[in-house]
Length: 397
Image (cartoon, one colour):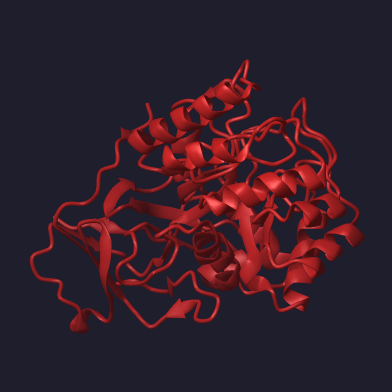
């Protein structure tokens, strides 16, 4: 049975000490000089050496035993429906399973798998508002799922976006999964959404769910959505020359997903690096989908891009945390005072050929997760899904 939670946060002080590597989530300084982190009431209050931090009066003390700590991973592209169940694969507890893969926050790209999903404008708005409300009040495994992402349909007017924003909806689902597929139509609606503070994502590549269509580079550029959704296809990718065009032709987020073309993923990653645009790269899974549910999908993308994309693991971890937090306007994803106390503690998997955590990921191995903390609350100990870590943290009596 998955652990379900509402929007609760830690009470009192949390102290994590004896840390090994501390990954910041920031490209400019991906590794911090610290062995201790303190959080109070769900927010980070101190980062540094234990002797320099106020660790007195801790309600919960954790000895990391030399494990690495990173910000909780953020999945930039999921398709939830209701609760911790997906009709796409008729699977329950999938969100809790992702938490065991180090994911502490998720962003919906549209609740498109709802059987009988409404396509009329009233229904589109009603579903988005319901999803936003439901996942604000319900957090499977403690995961913060930012949901309520309407798929735009023909006939929507500016007042519809104003109404959605006033109701608390902050996202658009994938442009192109509804009847609006032309770049000029999408551009108008994306601009309306942006005017009212709503962030947009556009489908890229071949069709996925029934009703979706082929969205090429010209359409993506004309629509000017905030995030180029699954630039490596979901599942079928654009030709590499078009992916290069998207990386060069705009400044929007480059989202690389697990459920896409791996050659295209590596190519987009390399293009971004060649262009000195790594701050645009974010990671998602694009799941649940026809290929299933991937609880370790973000970790797998980190290992793939580090090993075959020839990038330091700490840089790719930053793409999966701080980059996503910044582009998605979330208060997690970075180890910084005042931010949400969302952490994943991990170590090299047992028998990995890597010399330490970062080297093992650089060689393509998944890390072993020893603990996940969300809003300062310990949500799991040793992960049931990752390979066993050599060292695991311990909650002190």
